[in-house]
Image (cartoon, one colour):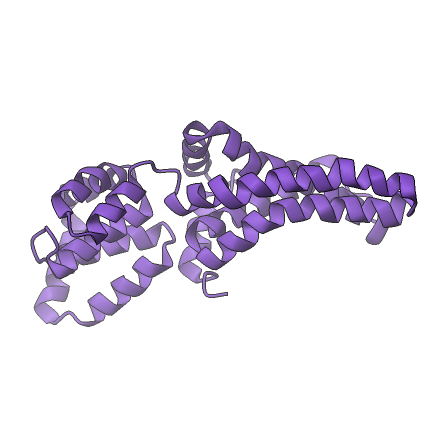
Length: 259
């Protein structure tokens, strides 16, 4: 559970979870609008479908297992909270991303099995109904969530990131920055990380550990664990003069001035 760091939980709370308990909305809306505009159908598969399935499953668990008479608005907000948190970690952790995309069809199967054994009773007719209403939809959702959905989560719904990353890894730095810089300006955490990497190692950019630390810090603030580790490693290597310069930059330099 390496992704459950204080930095990630803080970023999830302020960027992904909507105003349930007075938490700000804009970051949550901005991120989900980006995904919805990038591919509306896959967004439905990744977010809307698990949200609806989660409500159905949670309602059944409350009613038949825990014997709790939960109100519909309570189930609505609890499910929204859990899906938002899961979506956040799916975007940032490869291991959790794999679990998330598998869990979407898994929720359909689990819901179908629950009703088959606990509410309807096992019979040939109900088994056929399970196949039609659960197994086929689960296959359909799994096909898209584990394919297109996984790739979209990996890219952060940013169309420029993957081409820019591939160009960067191949050494075509100037072409890569044409893709990565617009994404980084929009706050894409992985693009910010790669720009930090470029400045740390002098890959197509001036060798500047101070600026690299700023890019890493900005990426880390959005919950990207890889950037957090790079930032901590780099900052601990600073001497007194570098640390003083870094702290001065924090106070005076805006993010857009980094480019």
